[in-house]
Image (cartoon, rainbow, N blue to C red; front, side, top):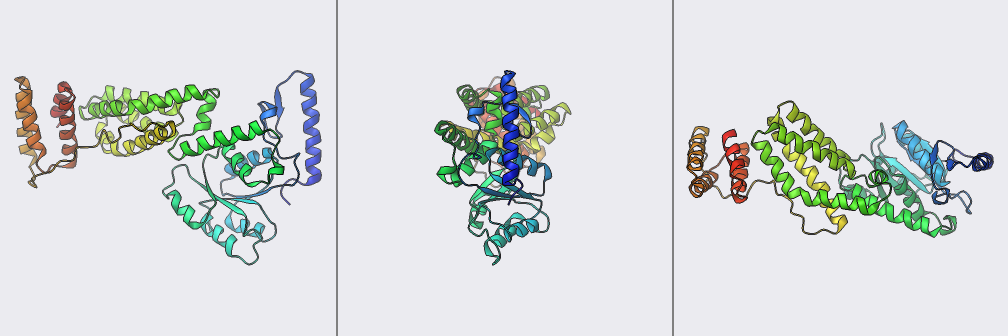
Length: 398
């Protein structure tokens, strides 16, 4: 059963051991994994090959590249791995063989992961009704986790699947006698996987980024904490630059944040910032303004998730939301809005900030178009922070 027969496995093990012995004589610290050469500490490689019993895994995924990557990761743990490209092929396998763990891609042609799951559990000929079944979803799935939990899945794996997370799933399912004797290794995998699971839920690829920090968790946490702490001020300054029409300033904010997000592993958020860099570069701040809300949703998702992971409970979110204002129900025509804006600018030119603020607050009481409402509220926030020049820039942009 599976792709590697017992005899074949013995031969492979002998070949690998021969290669290792040759390399040791040469003083090499490169281990042969059977698929690729990489620098590793051999003592910290999870392997169940030498333990009693075997663990059988079935993967169903239409993405050939993903299947190869999952096969590689599971093969390195020593478990038997069989992979198929569809839910229909998956059913053929479970009707003939028994598997301990099944990984189903959410999206597959003809029979998706949900229907495949239901068929595995209900088919009279299925030999895997008691198997643990995990669903593989895209990094940004429109379906909430609770949906998959209600279907009955035992867990969720998000692309790109991290090796440590997959190892931890296997550790949680295999009998204790199959685990390596290295307790420190098992503890390390569990701890790293727990951190990765939490952060992946908010769009952060923890393990990828930690590798760039060469495993220095303290340094990673320092940069992550700064990214969280800077949010309230930086997001406010960035939207001020947006509504003031300051292309270069806005582009610089977006470029800096893109690199900071990428560094801590917030890959999707870094792509969002990159889009805004290009919008500013193309002199399309009107487009950036339209997409601002989408950016903020992802930004705050990352910030809130990382803050929770760090144990920070004083993070101020919603700093770029428009103020909640009780309006008088009267819709003000744009020509009247412009008259009142000119009046506020005149107040400020006379250095009469108190009158200017009273007039802008009066304007805020009317029903306004959403884009004007946002700018008026940003002006009020600029007054609150005594950023009068910013208020003037936004007033002139209306």
